[in-house]
Length: 225
Image (cartoon, rainbow, N blue to C red):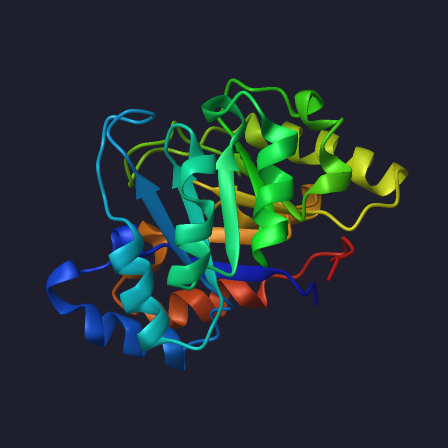
């Protein structure tokens, strides 16, 4: 059985009942909590910021996987780290200094991730792969939950995994957007290590069982720790 990770996305949770949603998350087999920070500039939507990260840090001991969908992420790296982020992913398209921001994230003590939009080729990350801990491939256009999965993502995962393996790097591949039981196996087979699941978990009749089923999917691809 593969050792892939499952990261439920808080964006799909019931915000009127967050304590119960976090209790379910803590009791489940989920590995980390995915938190989408949106600024209304890089993406049309606005979600939450450091205060929410700080609140979630108080409600779980599991890692917080913070996805910054904001322009100029370098302005806020230290603030999100202080709020409790264990992983900070920023968008390749949102800064002119990808290499520098990756170093900044690592210097803060968090793991560094670079996220790419559906139209961005994975080949553009070749020169920064040695400076980061994960690549977050968007399988929907960023900004809103509940979108349909873009199936070309599977080819991007395989292409990136081949380069990571060829260069013997310890870089994880995370997939965010429209992920569920209908495509998880194909993503894992292509080389994904972390599955972000929003609607397929929090909107399901039994979220804890949905997480368990995502964790139970078998794959023969190697997982990097």
